[in-house]
Length: 71
Image 1 (tube, helix red, strand yellow):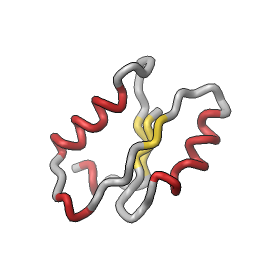
Image 2 (tube, helix red, strand yellow):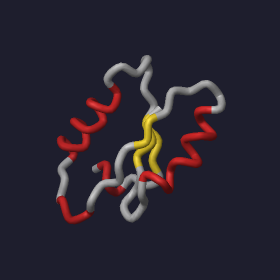
Image 3 (cartoon, one colour):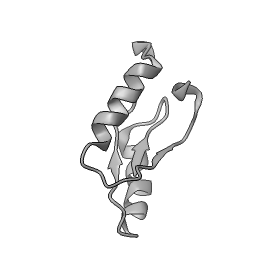
Image 4 (cartoon, helix red, strand yellow):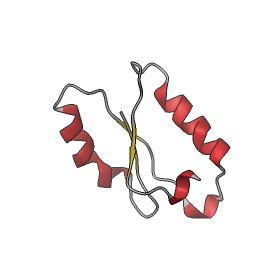
């Protein structure tokens, strides 16, 4: 599982949630929070997720707190 923080959140914000997921023997990685001023595109997000998923067993599950940054 990959936990993607939303805008205004930090990696620390999602760490507790990630620990709870990991207690069920899930492999969990928390991404760095996106910076709003970056103006990142969907392709850049896809590249970050692809890199983060390298080495993870399939299927990879992506969990986030908002969807506005994913469009």
